[in-house]
Image 1 (cartoon, rainbow, N blue to C red):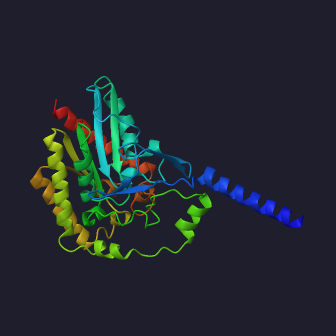
Image 2: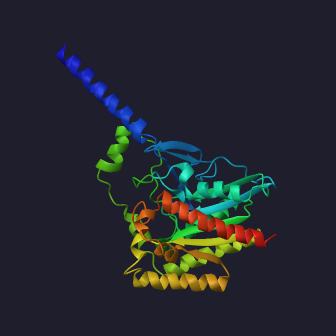
Image 3: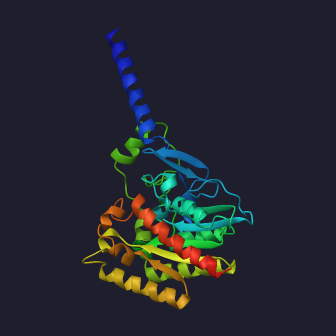
Length: 316
């Protein structure tokens, strides 16, 4: 009898914890990834979850966007945003507070009367670099967007070649959903994660890594221009780059290479380092040392919106 009571209590406690983890935090239903030979990896299509109260929706093209038509109606203004976790927003950003969603609402208001609908598509994934984003564009096209925005951060200038190795091996890139929320807690936070030996070779990629990524940016511009779309390159800084002592020497050199490259390639380019430096409290823009919070997303979306409106006006 006593044993039965204990078992019932333990089972009830287990179920209560499981339901709490699922309902409050969204554990047990993580976003899953799929490998891709060229892109490396991308979010599996057609997913919807809620993490820490924030809704996350992934459409049929692995975008953090609602379902779309491949080709929009002529009356639609469509912008394609390519990026990494900053564009994606991650679990800490609700769907409506991502940069793409903020831009979409603001552009709809600013262009009212010119377009029946405005779409800002969000093609992004954690730790993507320019070569991942180029491969995505080569595979899927630009979805007939009038403008393509490539959003990178300083670290992306040093990004390595695309690889699918993290999928199913790195706790941050699961390929299947766990049976229980408690299992996800164990796998993600408590279990010791063995390093992936093959990843070391990727991380130690030889050659001019900055040059490889600049070349990818140039190819993205070329593909965009081939469809008569506008191309805008945007870069956000790491929090430690703002103020003194500022960017490190190797970052300063890479930034200068990027600036020279955009001028030579006639690429419209927005560097947010000087913009963020004007903010009296730059920490208020960041979720952590690299990712932006809602306030940071609002600043970035507004500046991008102004630039897009100017370029679209010039094409009329």
